[in-house]
Length: 227
Image (cartoon, rainbow, N blue to C red; front, side):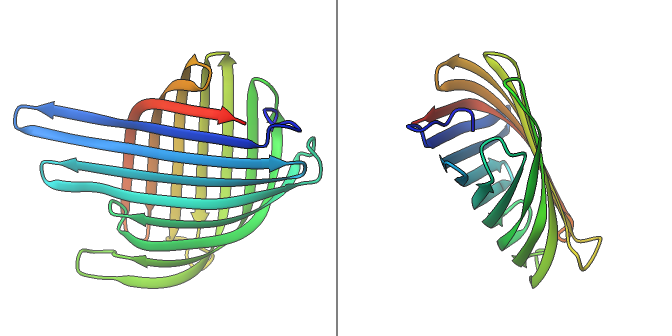
């Protein structure tokens, strides 16, 4: 929020990263693409996040995963530590055996630290989920549930050209303790010039209902701009 002003209301972030491993008789690759747009004005903010991960190896397709989320935040004032949020998200994931998943809900967030070097925020709320999953190659399951959604956001700027960021979700179902989703991302950015950075990303995801998880490490470039 410190980057926004009376004349700056928009934020655009685009990242392209991946990995490639090729040796005698073996080849695999992974592409990780992400696009973020944010709009902030006075006491409210709107964010659109999309991501697409695609990967193959010698045995065939490993990843074809898409996520899209739209969220809004309402602040009492720019200095307030507490704010309220709402979210709508869609996911389809080959690697996690999710055919279709829709989530929508609301909650509150509390900002513990917010200065030029460190940002720490924790949020919690409830999400309604409608899912279509494939627990095995021969079965298909459609269900609805309500989840508690706990999120931790951390950004650390130890130097002007170096930054770290992390986001983690813990989403257990209120119906069953064995039905939970874990999502986490850890990133490091090294600024080359204004608006352009080298970046690395480590992602971990698990859907316990399908007994599937993935761990992805990618590196590439990140473009960001306030306007």
